[in-house]
Length: 122
Image (cartoon, rainbow, N blue to C red; front, side):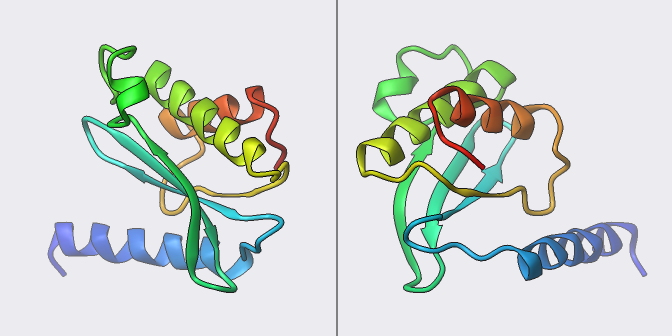
């Protein structure tokens, strides 16, 4: 098997393994992360209805002016903090963290810490 295809296959397997154990509801949504080289995106998803409750990214107007780069740990922290504030304003205090195929390290960890700093629990 080609090296890149194998990497992709293993990444999908890791993501599926995590998703088997995690389910988001209206009271406790799933925080799904997407990470690129320049930006980071996060959504709060209600899996029962298949809708996005809230979302945040380093491309948001509120953060774009404040951040020098959305692809670093400081940017990820601010994105997590903004999402936490948005969920708390909707009356949601608990969530389930879905790291997907990513390791809980670096920007992913920083995003989670930002969400916790805003008062969100998971």
